[in-house]
Each structure stands twice: as structure tokens, then as C-alpha cells.
Image 1 (cartoon, helix red, strand yellow):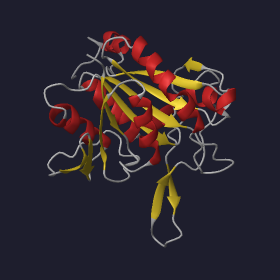
Image 2 (tube, rainbow, N blue to C red):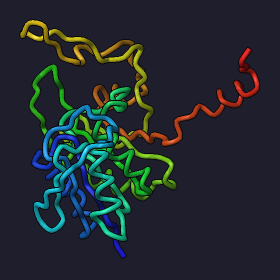
Image 3 (spheres, one colour):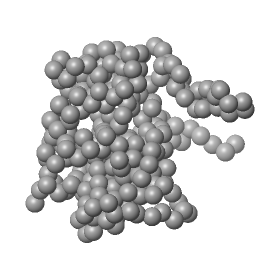
Image 4 (cartoon, rainbow, N blue to C red):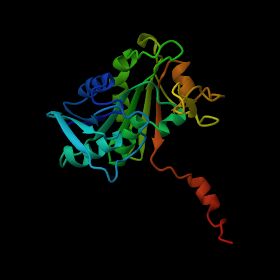
Length: 256
């Protein structure tokens, strides 16, 4: 029996990146399902819509939109309801329009889709196509198109258990010059990249990333993708406990 693959994203069911992800998935399997938000959910993180009724729109036999739902909501609906008694073996989230690097994964709906997939027992993989914002805000999807299937196939083959999920970023260099796959840590920024950003409308503001906190680790995902032109793969853990610190602190804390 072949792989069953569930696709979600945070840009919405009609976004161009999810069509690219569907092509990637269909090169790996003929059992591909899509459950995605009906609109943009960028920055939703791992929000789950507890206490709010949601609606599922069926767009075709294996494509569904969750009205107002987050990527995590979509994965839950797919894995525990829409796919019946055989949940997906692999959850692919993306392809996101723009990189999800470093600490930004903590707010990324794309990363959350893969994380929830892993929590539900699948191999969870998030994919994002980098943008060189110093040149343009337009997305050149050529790297994701050229290298997405090979990267997904390699990660699926190498995946160990279900205690991890994988964050993949495609560089914005010419696809023919991409140097390969680099397995790297995520960039821990010196401070949160998220800032108050005043709107032109009086009394209103945005939460934005106006600049990249420095310094940058030359061995971490941000620089290896942006500067070196690699497809970056970062294995992330579901177990978020610092086990060494927990052992060191155990028995040292008291109430008095």
C-alpha cells in the first residue's frame, strides 16, 4: 500500500504554493488529499479553534476548505475525520510564499501544519519558498518546483520515528545553481524579530518584521539558505523540554 499524503498550508486553499505542493505530492503518491484554510492564515501559529464551530467545504473528491480554520485545524479535521479510518502517513504543509527561518517557525502556520501532522502520527514536513526581499516581494517558485519532490522524498526516506517534524526552505537563487540539501539548525535570533510598526492610519499599527536581528549564525538556516544557496532542512522536536536542564534543576527548587 502506497503513501497516503495530506496537504495543508497557511496561505489558503487557492494559493499558488499549494498547487505546487500538490504536484510534489502526486509525484510521490496517487493517494493525495488537501485540507486547507479557505483564506490566508499566515502567522496563525498552532492556533486551534477551541469553542468555535467550523465548517468544511468540499471542493472536489479529495480537496476540502475549512472556513475560518487554521492550518492546525485543517490537519486535525483531515487526520481524525475526513481521511476516515486511514490517516495520512505524511503531512506536507506549504509551499509557503516566503521563507520560514529561525525563530519565525514559532508563529508560522506552515510549520504548525507539519507539527500537528507529526503530533497526529505522520511524518510532518513544512516547505517554504524563499524570497529576496531586497530585490522584490514577488515569489519565484522555481526552486520549490525543481527540487521539492527530491527533497520531500529524501526527508521521508530518512525520517526517524514520529518525534520530529521537518522545516524545509528553498533558496531564491537560480534553481540550476542550488548547491544541494543542507541539514542545519534554526537561527536563534538575539531578540524577537517581531516589532510594533506604526500604520499610516492614525492610532493603528501592525505587528511586523522590519529588520533581521543580528548577528546571524553562519551555520544556521537563515544564512545557509540566503547566502549559500542550499535547500535547508531543519529537524525540529516535539519534545520541547530541555531534558538536561530539567535533570539539573530537579531537587534544587523549593517552596521556601
